Image 1 (tube, rainbow, N blue to C red):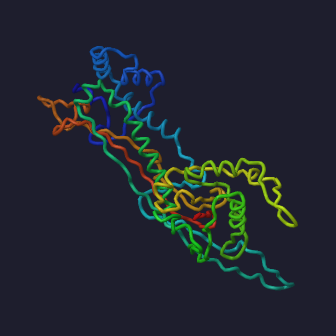
Image 2: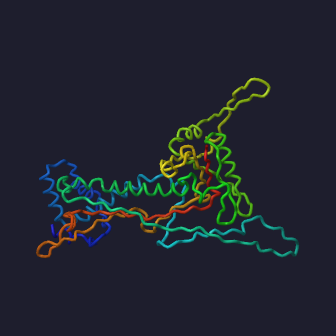
Image 3: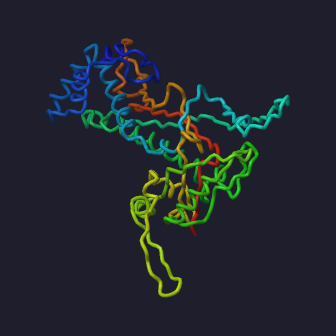
Length: 377
């Protein structure tokens, strides 16, 4: 086993696994062997595994299998928060400024004959962005590896991917929700934007067709700091799980009913539900009831503009490290005679085999004009 570690570059301490780009056939064979897909007897599986470990390419294949497994699951299970929350990149962990410049886009002044062209005032403000490191260490005992014939490894990538996905989802929800309801850094009646203008983007309306229409109108009436209309289109409806079916009924129903009671008995009349024609996308966020612990966490709903029109919030990742990183710790044991020992035999003190996941991200609230919250009593 001593030659196993010498074949693996970068296994001194912690190092990312999966360096090469082997063929799909080779990866498939390595994965089949690691998971014992053919259900071989234990002694036969152990023999083939030891034989593979002595080859020059198996360490790279093993690392690539782990990395490919997590990346494939991570990319396939991306949460839909990326539809209504902007995504950006930062080069390091330092606090960064996202500047917001106002001016020069207001209506032009009339210039009389031989008159002077005047300079319009401009102002500058900024939002602060910063990244943070999240992670966890997993350990598997050497006894578990022996008893389970390496089967204990089979769900490590899945666990890492799930942990990273859940971390992202929780952090995004925390940008627009808080323990007491909508996050006060983004919503208020009113709330001050960094440009100095007070913006009202929070109400108390329950989720109905009429109230959704009203909220869309309120968003569309938002103006910039100079009073110019910006015609915000709220096209992403975000609700907690208890409001999912109500929201789906509103967005898919072709008709709505109204009652005419003037001059006699009340008579219901159908009319077109134009909401179903506006292309509003529904998003059910299960973390809303985790983050929001208020009495109205099951009836509060949110509208967001598409990030292409304007950003209400943004989640940033470290450039070059957008996906979670998996690492394995090399063994700190040395064989008698000075030879290196495989990391699969565990560390010196406990015989534990150690893995680690690291994910780097950070979010910030941006322009409140592009979001609206309704806290239904």
